[in-house]
Structures are given as structure tokens and as C-alpha cells.
Length: 255
Ligand code: NDP
Image (cartoon, rainbow, N blue to C red; front, side, top):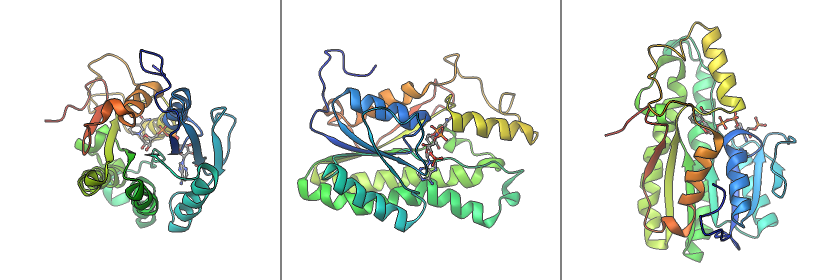
């Protein structure tokens, strides 16, 4: 699905910033927002030939305050402002268990998977407040509810992101800004596959008994996640805020 069934370009006139759009889920989100008529700026640490055609690109590292400030400035310069903000950049390396995760990797996981969103939101949400409109989506992980040792730094950071996202949604709702979280399950992307291979090579068992089978019978595709994001940032989701949509084929049901 790239546009709603009636084929309208429902995001025409909207300006979108998507982090981590050079491959995987982020590139699929960029592609769908472009197809729906939005003007899109995306970022990654380095440009690739998989940045979707039609998007503007600026190289930035979202893990630092300086990186967030540079990105916000580039968004103002390139787009003139941001109506749609999708925090997709994320990931982490697995370790043998919780106590084997080095201190700097905890910090890195928090910076990339949690604080990057906090910093960028705090730079761009005030401008949305002034315009009294906007849509923000945070990309978390379905695995938040079943944390495992090798990824505790990652899932703890994503859990913080989900909690923060709900609180921000309540703060910004009176100003017409909607804030939601999308939590993907196992999705076929370069980063996802590399991480699972790393885990398997460490003796982890990513495809065996400690990971439940996907009830819908397949891994996710980047477009599955992008479909949900493009719905959430559209007017079709105008009564949706402070929600977490788990898109995982039923692998990690939440009560
Ligand atoms: P990929 O690793 O395939 O892509 C990640 C993107 O983020 C790339 O564009 C990458 O570019 C960019 N990025 C990474 N680090 C930084 C940084 N410090 N600053 C700026 N950009 C950065 O990841 P996926 O598409 O698999 O994942 C996307 C999101 O979905 C992540 O938040 C991930 O945690 C989440 N997710 C993915 C799952 C999966 O199975 N694939 C499952 C659950 C959640 P570059 O490296 O050049 O900077």
C-alpha cells in the first residue's frame, strides 16, 4: 500500500523528516510518504544509493545533541519546517548477556534508541505547537515486552521511548499534535538481518525455541511497518494519539 485506496495524495503539502531513511524500514517509510505527496528529508550517517529517489538527504548522526541540532537546522533550511517527524534510526549490537554489555554500549543504545528522539522532538515540537498541528511517530520494538540479556540495552532504551512517547502525546494533544509509537516485530532489513546473524554467531538462538514462531507465518517486510506509519501520520488517524501499534504478525501479543 503506498497511497490510500482512493489514490489521493493525502500528504500533499506536508513536510516530513524521517531519520534512518537510507535503507530498511526507514527507506520504505520515506518511499510511502513521497508516494502520498509529502516533501521528505531523510538522514543517516552516510548516503547510500538506496535513499529513495525524490527525497532530500543530509548526513547526520542522531546520537548527539549537536547531531540533533544540525538535523533540525537542515530541516528548517530544506523544508521550511516539519509537519511529520518519524524517528526510525535505531539498533544495537548483541552481547553475551546483561553484565557483558559495556558501559559505553548502554550509553550508545540510549542515545540512539531513546535520547535521539527526545532531543529532536524538543527542537521541533515547539514549532509544531506554534502551528497547532503535527504528527510524530517513534519506532520502538515489539521485543520490549520480552527482553533478553543480549539486547537489554536496546529493549530498555526502546521501553523508555514508548513511555516517553505516551507522555509527550498527552502534553501535545491540546495543541493538535499527535504522537504515536510503532513497534515492529522481526522485519527483513539489512540491519535486522545483520543483528540476528551476529546473535546466532555468538551462540544465540534467534530462530529457535526461545523466540516464538510468528503466528501469521512470515517475517515482516519494511513495507508492513511503513504502511502503519503512513496511516498514523495521515488524517485517517486524526483520533489516534498516545498509542503503541505493535506490527509483528502476532509474535508478541500485548494485553
Ligand atoms: P537498518 O539498520 O537496516 O537501518 C537503520 C537506518 O538508521 C539506516 O539508514 C542507518 O544508516 C540509520 N542510522 C543508524 N544509526 C544512525 C545514527 N547514529 N544516526 C543517523 N542515522 C542512523 O535498521 P532497520 O530498518 O531494521 O530498523 C529501523 C528501526 O526499526 C530501528 O529503530 C530498529 O530498532 C527498529 N526495529 C527493527 C526490527 C527489525 O527486525 N528490522 C525489529 C524491531 C524494531 P547509517 O548506518 O548509515 O547511519
